[in-house]
Each structure stands twice: as C-alpha cells, then as structure tokens.
Length: 165
Length: 165
DNA sequence: CCGATATAGTTCAACTTTCAAGAATGAGTC
DNA sequence: GACTCATTCTTGAAAGTTGAACTATATCGG
Image (cartoon, rainbow over all chains, first blue to last red; front, side, top):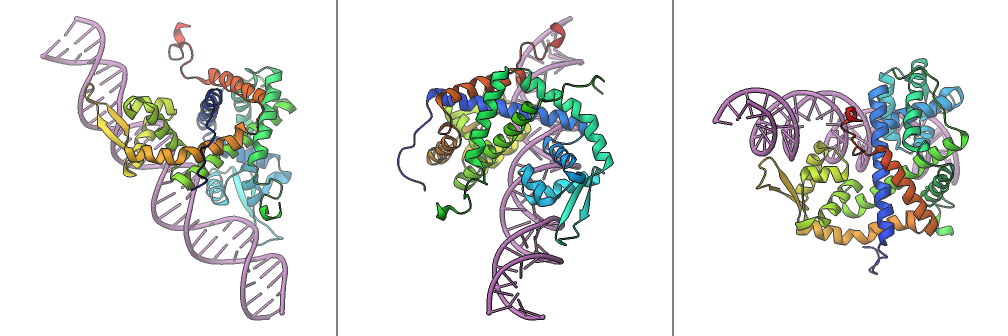
C-alpha cells in the first residue's frame, strides 16, 4: 500500500529530536496524570473536561461541543461524563431546543474540586515546563505547537472537501 | 494538602502556549495512532516496542529493559507483549542467567511488519512535524524537549535517594 | 546454609477507551 | 405529512491500562 518510492528517512538530528519529543511528552503526560489521579482522583483528561465546563457560559456545554474541544469521541465523553456524574461533579441536563441534545453542567461540588486542585495542577505544569524554559523558549514552543496543530487540524481549510482544492 | 500560599497562575501567554501544547500533542498522538492502527493493526506504542526490539542486539530485550525504554509499566508491557505474541510478531524467551527473567524477541514476521510500515510511519511523522518546521525550529524543539525531560526524568541525580541530597 | 529482603515478571480486579450498533430527534424533499 | 438521510447521544462488548497482590528467583548478611 502507499507509494513504492523510498521514503525520506529522518536525519540523525531529526531522529534525536523525535525521540526527545516522544520522551518528554510521555513523561509530562504521565506526570500530570499521576499528580491529578493522586490529588483529585481523576486522570488529566477528566480534569480537562471540568476545566472546560468551568469556563463555559453557565458552566455547561453541549456534549458534542465538549467532545470537540477536548478532542475526544462522543462515545468516550459519554462514559467519562457518566463517571463524573457518579462523582457528583457534573450533571446532565436536557436541551430544550433540541431534544436529542444534552448539556453537561459543572456542579458546585465539581467547582469546588477544581478550586482545590487548580493550584497543585498549575504548580505541576509550571515546574515541569514554564519554570524551566526561558521566555524566548516559551515563545518558540508556542509557535512550533501552533505550526504542528495547523498541519493536523481536522478543521484545516476545506479539510472535508478535498475535491474542491 | 500542599502549601496554602497562592500559586503563581499562568500568564496569558503561558496559558496560550500550554493550550497549544496540549492541542498539538493530542492531535499528533491521535494522528499517529490512527495511521498505525489502520496500516499496521496496532497502536503507536506497540509499534514503538517493535522498533526498540529491532534495534537491540539479537533483536531482543529483557522485559524490564524494554519497559524502561518505552516508559511504560512492566504490567502494561506484559499485556502488550502477550498481544504481540498472539500476532506472531514477538516471542518470549527465558533467560538462562536469571531464571526470573524473560526476553522479548522480535520474530521474522515482526521484522517484516516493521519493514512494511516504517516508510508510512516516517512519512506521517515528517508531514506532521519535520516538513513543517524550519531547521531552526527543529533545533529549538529538540532543546526544549530535552529541558523538559530533564525536569521529569525519574533518573534525575539521586532521584531515588532524596535523603542524601 | 539460612533468613530476610529485593527484583523480575505475571495476574487479577477495577477502570478507561474504542468500535460498532442502536434509539431518538431533526431537516430536507416531494 | 411521509420518506430519507443526517445528527445527537448512548450502549455494550472487546481491548487496553492501572495498581496492587502474587510467584518465583536472586542477593545479601550473617
């Protein structure tokens, strides 16, 4: 499958950078997962869901919106919200204007969990990342990450209409 | 828990960079996972295990070595190798010098799977990352990732002997 | 050699993620 | 309105992950 031409392999430097990337991103993800699992009793992604809700108007979002902004499938979100609901941190609400729809709303308990854990989480992110990088490097990182995202964005220009290009 | 002093929150720029980081790394990981799942029938991490084995002397590694270099728990590795063994891509071998030990060895079939999928994978990495960044940015990314890793390295200086510091 | 402790790897139960249906509602067309 | 198709969200089963308990072997200090 694919074309039969020899691919351009990675140069030595590229290989090193790629490994460093995999290494560092894995370590950071594991670190934050463990920190939040220990302190807040949930993995990083669940915490992210609560954060998104906390910043939304009326502290609620449609399931599909939330799934999109957290970049997970609706199915995964359904299960995740079920779990968070069991914890009492989120509540589902039906949508009046679209009877198929559901809102996930952050409860007061959920807000409280966030309030208690935000400091520890920010500190962890700081210690791992921002306190170790120069201002210049932070800026470089931002630029690089934006370039990467552009190339992977499902929402790229006409991404779903390739025949129009 | 933790100290009661107000943490240093993230500045606007830091917040943006942090989100860009999460966004981009998630997209890339998802992208590679899907590419390999589709083409090779396994997730990115499993592919990484095969790569590690392919580069080891005699194409085999002790379980603990492999777990360390892939940065996963031994438990997770046990399950993963069980699956790869079922696929016929890896075989377990007992270790003569330490009867507790096991080697995971890449089979010829495993090598073949790697040979067939390496081009597609490199191309995916290239398209997502290296073909989109300037030489300078690649270098910057490498530096930044190494700094990050240093701060998270479980193997930090005397990491497991904190009382000696 | 003995006993205590450490290490290698596996296994189990709980939890999370994925994938493929499926139920319900909405929207467009005639 | 009825038909068709799209969208929203959920469900259930299979696969993957985690953390703790467990087995077996090795190592250390007498």
